[in-house]
Image (cartoon, rainbow, N blue to C red):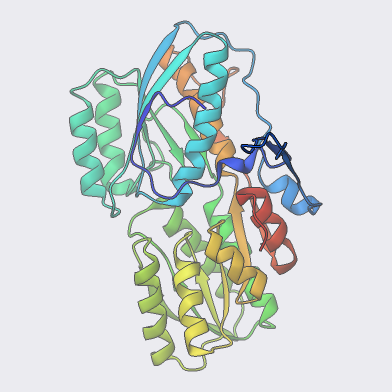
Length: 363
């Protein structure tokens, strides 16, 4: 795999994602004995197979240049964005096969911060990039910055899970366009599990992050439909497992009979499940995405369900759209103004298959 990239990344979503279908590891010992080992993927459910698409091919668009240089910044160094990066790398590899070099910066802070993102964007305006891509940390703070950049002639897109505010001048968005519905769907599953009665808490994530806030709104609106359901706490964990763990312990102390927790990002289901397990609580957790530990908790029944986003497709489509924008192409026949990627809700019976599909390992 080609790396024409400067990256700031955490633990990588296993590269076996697309190789796992049939991996052959070949080597030989000193005595010449063939040590070829064959791994075959176990059968997976249709739900899991359709949740993440690793079989992408570049479309028929012919780029106008032979080299591109992009800048992407996202909310926080985290395994979720490592998975997005794998999709970008696959698109980059396919472009290279066509004789087109795509290089890019892919950088984020260790702690989510709209001010940090604002500073990064101010600095990047001094550089020479064909396109600037932003996973919006806070739509109120960052959207005006993007408007200003577009007015100054920069080609700007948004990507990942967080678009800019409605009416922002950014050229296009690739990612999750249905975060509100994801929050509503997860909460609906929880309400059904609880027979539409009980006390629940919401762990949101980062303040101002559109995806986290939208999921929380979807959760609140869904709970409000049922008179015997009550939200007893709403807390921001800032996309930190440790914060989510400590907040969950506090919520349990204040609400000993807590029935459920709705988790709006990839970190907080893990923190919440750790706390629930430590306390021996029967509180039911629903949450987002594909963290290894979260999938283990799902498999063990500590988490009831997870909404898994297709990060690989987000990354692949982001790079394809970025090339077109860099060439001056506007949304329309070549690409939509918003490229929607899917979210699939998985349950305990799906956990082992999803773990193997994404990480090439067995629970």
